[in-house]
Image 1 (cartoon, one colour):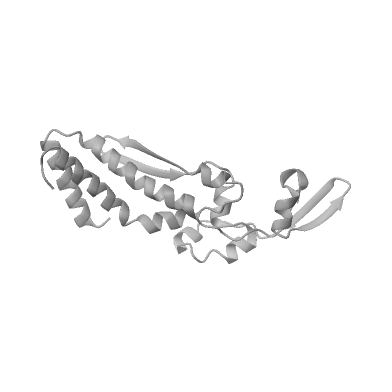
Image 2: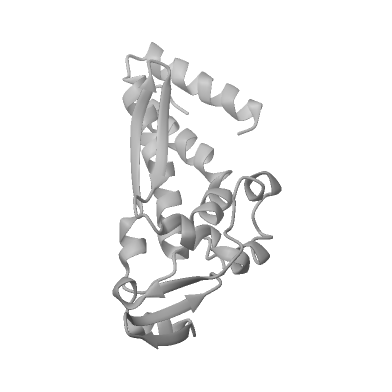
Length: 182
């Protein structure tokens, strides 16, 4: 957020405080509204198979310390980062949309790998055209990775200017409720 936006936010918080409002509560509500915007966009962006990833995208707002309220959008699915950033050489070759500082922090496995049939269903393997080998130990599928399917990063980037506006709008409404005008 631009420094000017922070000054305006600070001014709103001071006014709410002077009028006896619960500054932390109002700020927490504004942050929650902004966080919900990002969560909605991330869910809209998420690839949908069985809906597991989309349904796992949550949001939370918490007090980090006495002066900091943090909104967070997240998923705890183990495979979520693989979907966001891709895997293997295929993922690395197709991650140009990520910012360079983030790209430099991701390490991609450079060889392909085999997946046993107990770890993937046949329909999914066929959908992605995995090479299939039948052995005495079962069916194995070979992959060199998958392209990134970003959903979280684009959501945060699309809303980076909107969230401060949503917070400020909520604070202005709180100020009006307290009789302080806009």
